[in-house]
Image (tube, rainbow, N blue to C red; front, top):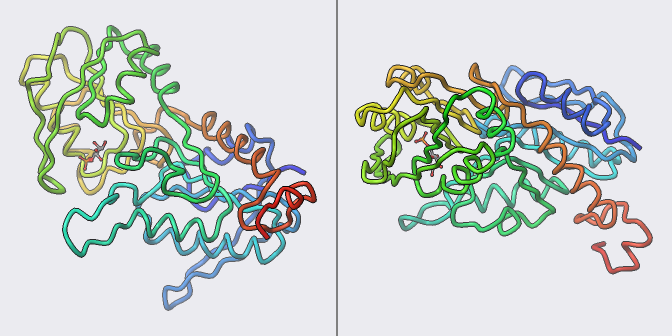
Length: 317
Ligand code: R5P
């Protein structure tokens, strides 16, 4: 039977594109806030025996997480065969260590919370720094799709003589791959972050500045990484840079500040709804979801509705 996809929160059009890629049906869901601020949620489409997919991007996650958990549990209670989550942006990946005594390692807690309610997870370019893979953090089948292909394609079509700039060492993984796919040069800079809004980029890594710089980053949050990189490139005499971002959170006024710093153009993927959305990532997300759905066809991690074969292999009860 076709999977059933419920949209909780996503960029406009993403759910329809995913549905088309996955051959899924669209589920209807009613949701509202009670006067006291609590959430009312109802799955209007029957889920019994269906592979349910919840689509919920998790920027500004605190307000989105409870409705997501309610939806997951409701689907399970009403007999869904499996309940998966496509979270184009996966929150709470950056606090991956206790940097100062007493800090909550929120990545761990969040992973435990989601993994307790959904059978599988798909996201795109999660911020994996100290965790080598998504599976090192999430104990459920979890797939990370990549936006490098769609980003490189956009650059190839839109940017004359691109030179890919990664603002920090972590961005090397995207910068190098995108440069190779787009047939461009890449330079990776070094960043020191001393606080949420306190970022400096080392000029020492700047190379040949001819061409159109395209700064690539996975997340634009405070925007400081991109702003500092744009300013550095402008001061060094480069052409006005283009900024290409996978996850356009753009907190506060950071978007207008980035434009004010001299970015020629800012584009992003539709992992999070933003005016800059120009690059569709429904294809890689759907491919990753298909891979996981195929895998859980054999063994469901929560042991619900196991196939006889899976039970024979000692799948979870
Ligand atoms: C950091 O390591 C990430 O790759 C991004 O560069 C960072 O999250 C961007 O954050 P902000 O916009 O706050 O500088």
